[in-house]
Image (cartoon, rainbow, N blue to C red; front, side, top):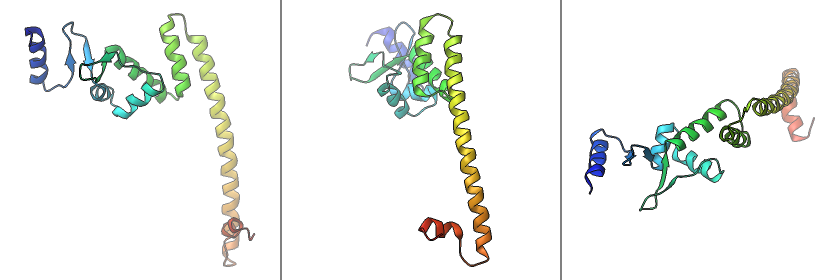
Length: 159
């Protein structure tokens, strides 16, 4: 083993870290190390790979996926975007905008406007469901005194 690699491996082991360091001091991660650093399960990293959002930087001699600090930053970006409510297609678009270098605000605003419109639509649908359930509850309470549940009868087709 060469001296710089032995030193890097020894320092890593001594610190109790499982992260692999290359000679140029750029961090290199296996899939489980990358997942741990981003606080996600390894299955999430694999899912993002299948979805085309994340790619390994290469493979080790043992054919393990290897990621770098840019991969970690990208994974954190994806997770942050999802926490804000962006869907994976939105995230894919945002990643494209991020690498484009131009002002992304108009594009981001368009994505946000579309997402808000979808949420407003879902809220209307949920409000309708709430009204229907409220009426069903009222009917159930009214029919209870007669010893039968209107909702159960309606579900059985006997209403």
